[in-house]
Structures are given as structure tokens and as C-alpha cells.
Length: 609
Image 1 (cartoon, rainbow, N blue to C red):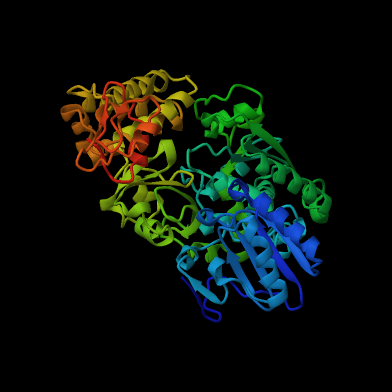
Image 2: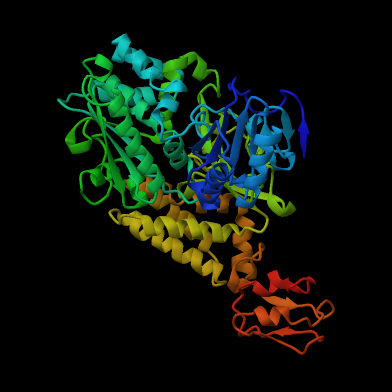
């Protein structure tokens, strides 16, 4: 539903005062996957064909509304600002003709606007965009647009101050904690590195985002790369480093491209290189593309990878702040942490600490994925509840099913059940549930999700990603996975749950790095909150969610079957037989439980038992 209400929408008013028209196309990885390239080409071609003038076309990062991609934003003096969603190439000529000839827009396409209220407005209303303030707004490949949005003013401010210790004090006062998962106070880490003895120091940005379903850091690097670069330069000035590395996975080619371009542009403008902005401070940034190893998200494994070694963690202490990259003091933070820094310096620690809770200040970026209506990228103040995120911002569960749990923290995190939906999202509260904040992945599950299978899926991931250095992690996760696989096949035995808990404890206590120490979390939290599902798999040989293939059967209800033969024609193994207009049957020996028959039946004549 779209309703015209002057100045009541979620977008700020346009700043355009002349006859110009600005068209922004969401051109991050999410938008491109949905067809943004075709949309962009259609816009360019139609403008050329019609000879329209005074139009600026910009390619931005993702706005976060993945559920509405492809997205375009229109801005002009007459229509103010509107965002159109689910745009197709066929819609483009009509959209442009309405805009240029009639100075109007088809309200059926509007998902947000300055003068329109929509059902999707709540997606933005409960957000506080600090890190994401430029994503989907500026062209990430144009440094001038970043500068117009107050870019590099924070850098100028700290260089003019001539007070590196004051910069660290400001970050400490802000309460910013590392957004990579552990939540260690950023200012304290910077202080440790500054105080460490060494003739050369490094800044490292961890962009090795490996959690399934997570795309927070990717979207920031694609949509606002200069904010990360500026944050790194400020950190380098604060700790006394003159060189930095951005470690980004090679599976993010668009992020790599835009980071390289941003570094080049920053060098040309004098924000990077020797004697930055006429000061005596010099800094340069390199990019290291990772090969996709999940374990390289751990800082000592990441350091080894940059050095050209196999990505494996090492014992700590010494910590990287004392002995890091090439044995030199090194500060490591993730993408989101660095992107916060320019905003804090420019607006002040008190401004930033006014958001969030007493111990968890500021905002947090999350990737909403799974069985949710409004999947995408959001940024919310710390302390907001899970219920507000999932049911207000996220719009609740798809297909009208019941919410069951949310996985936070990826493979290293845990599952939080429906009875805990009202907990505040901050480091302490989330940790108490058995999950972790992690880097910001949220995978939402409904009643059709089997929690035993979910635990098996995540453990399969971490077991494969283990570097193998620790016996507990290498062998322990393997034995846990084997047990879970037996349970999901209907071969579980009495005592398996207790065995899983014992193995989990040993893996957590005996592993060297965070991968092994947190790998059992999905298993432990699903046992804690959904033990009845484990018991049903083991004792009754049934999967309550009807997902584990070895524990279910597809049967045809003869009273409902019309004999239309659709299921038989679609069955890939020809396990269904019967005469036309007569009830069919499924050969259980031949059936592979693929579910195609269930999905294709229009008469609800097939049941899962």
C-alpha cells in the first residue's frame, strides 16, 4: 500500500533546486544478481533514444532492501525522492517517460519516498544508519561524492589536532567495540598497539567474511569503500603505523575492484601516500586477496596468510598488538569497525555513545537472511530486541509459518528460540543465550526447519574449514559430525546426546583458536533449546520438522488424488505409478524423498509422514 503524505515518508528531502534529475541504480552484488546491469543499460539506452537532458545516472552500492531488488531511486525538484522496487527492464521506458514528460511516478512501483508512506517504511524507521549512511546513496567509484558527504573531514580533523593519543581517547570514550565478533574495546586495542615497542607498525583490516548468509562487510566495501580507508588511515595515525593491509576474500570481486579504485583516488587527492594533506604523516594501503579459508578470519591465521604462509592460527600471547605482521606490532579490526571511526571522530564520542546500551554502544549492521519477508542489510542501535528486528524491520516469517529460531554468529554462533525473542541485542545478552553477536549474520528459521539437521549443516561447515592444527578441533568436530549424521539418518543411539555434549566441551576447551572454541555452539544451543527434537530422532526415529530424508515418507492420500499424473510425470526416479483418473501410489523403495511430487501436487493429495 502506497499513500501520498507530504513530507511524511522515510527519505530525507531532495537537495536538488534546479531542473536536474538524478537516477541511482543499486549496483552492489545483491542488485547485480537481481538484474541491475540490465536495468542500468535500459535506462541509458532509453535516455539516448528519447534525447532526455539534465539526467545524472549513478551506480551506487546496495541500499539494503535485498527483498526489493533491483532498486532504482529517482530524485528531482518535482517528485522529491522516491525509491522504486522490483524494477524490470520493461518498466524502464514508462518510468522515464512519466518522470521526464509528466513529472510524476507510478505509485505502484514505490517502496519508499519523501512524500509517500508505504508498508516497507518500517524497514528504515527502526534503523540508525551510521556505517551504512552512504550505502545506496553515493557512487562508491567517485571520491568526490564521498567528499561531498563529509568524507575525509575526520582525517583532516585528526591531522590538524596533532594528537594521536587524543584520537585513541575519543575512540575509547565512544565505547566502540570490535564488530568482528569478539567485541573487544577498539580503543584499548589501539592503545596496546601504540604502546608496543617497534620501529614499524601495521594496520590490518579483516574483510574475510566467511559466515554462510553474511554479507555485511561486502556491502560496506562495495558501497562505501572510502569510509573503510579513512578509518584505517586514522587508526594508522593514532597507533603510529605507516602501512596497512585490507584482507578481502577473492570471492568478492566487486569489493576488490572498488577498494583498488578508492585507494588510487585517495592517493591522487592526497589522502594517502607521503605527507598526507601537507602533514608529516605518511600512510599507504595494500590489498591482499584471500583464498576463501574460513579460518583466515582468525587474526593470527590472517596474518600468516598475508605473509604468504599457510593460514593457520598460532598461540597467543604474544598478541598481534605486540608481535603481528612480520613480527611487528599490528592492529587488526574488521571492516565495520573501521567504517565507524570517521563518523565518531567527526561527530564526537558523546554522539556515538548516545546510541545503544551501557556496555554495548553504537549501532550494529546485520544481514537478515532465511525464512524472512524482508531479507537484506540493516543497521540498528544496540539494545533493540530480536522481535523488533525480525517482525518489524524484517516483516516476520514467509508463508505464514511460525517463527522457530534465529541463528546468530554464523557457524560460530548459536540458535536463539522464540521464547527469547524479547532479549536486547547487545553483546552480553546474546552471549547469555549461548549464541554470539559474531560479525552480524542473522539466519531466521521457521517451523519447517529441523534443528538437528541445522546443527549438522553448520558443524559440517566448520569441520571442513578446520585447519587441522589442533587435535581437538580436527578430530573432535569430525566425531561430533559423524554422530549428528547418524542421528539424522535414523541411526541415533541412547547416549548420543550426552556424547555430543561431552565432545563439545572438550573441543571448546582444547582448541587453539576461535574456530574450534566456538564450533560446538550450534550443537549446544540446539540441544539446550530443542532437545525434544534430538530425542524424537533417536527414540522415535522421526523428524518432527519432516526434513530428514531417512526419517520421512511421501504418501498419496487416495481420497484426494484425482489421477492427474502430474506427480508421476515429474518424479525423477519414476517411483510413482497409477492409471489416469485413478489414485496413484508411491514405491517407497524407489522414492528418493526429493519432494518434487509434494511441491507439484495441486490437490494437496501428498503428505509427508
